Image (cartoon, rainbow, N blue to C red; front, top):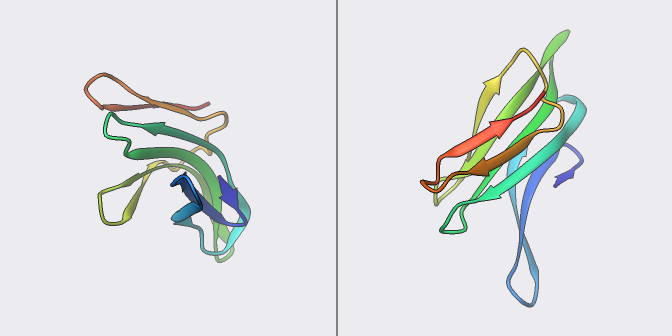
Length: 102
């Protein structure tokens, strides 16, 4: 889910909702969008999303991959040429993350 310029991951413990920030974009001109979520066999979350981040006079679009390493969320840039539309992600039986976007 995106709230403002932040991608957040939510869980429900049976009584209350908990949230964790996956990604907070500095100086965005367009908020992150097209977020996809997949869980592995141990219920660890993986997200794929796109955004446009401005950088001074310029900026760039990108498709990013986020995962929680057990301590903090890590985010990696997958593609800086295109901001992925209609992103999707899944895990195979070996917990290998797969993703698509156009």
